[in-house]
Picture (cartoon, helix red, strand yellow):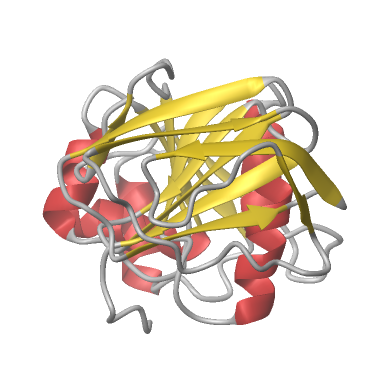
Length: 225
């Protein structure tokens, strides 16, 4: 699967694109992501769809933050709308993921920036799905699960790479072509110390024997909303 900054060599392409209401991705980045994928807009995520004149398959949310003009644009273009009450048990992004199902392959954009609690919820929620990538032009998060390995070819070397355990422990973690290499290591969720590493080659490999590991790439110092 290919993104603007890198290609995941042994990973099939993601068929779906979820546009959430966090930091808005760059328009050109979004247009490239949208090409050939089914698009699902989540609440405020409809605004970039409107700005790029890209029609999503559906608009989902409680619309507590989306601009009225963007919601009206969706209505005028006969985009199906699934409206939920503001007072509910799940976030809008969680509702969109549940609509697609556990075995989906998807990129989620508009997910970074803003409040820590929202990002925390999204990072852990997305780990429960088959193949999810969180991405914009500044940051990428993806998951490597027990028994898997991933090979990444970079077109742009990230400023930093961090390995963040989603499960209580991640065992048998091995890396190739990082500045500080890890070999058959156990990483702990309550002591996430494998952060702010550096990529030493245009191609890296990461494998995990047990557990779920989030891999984070940072391509820009400027990561505020």
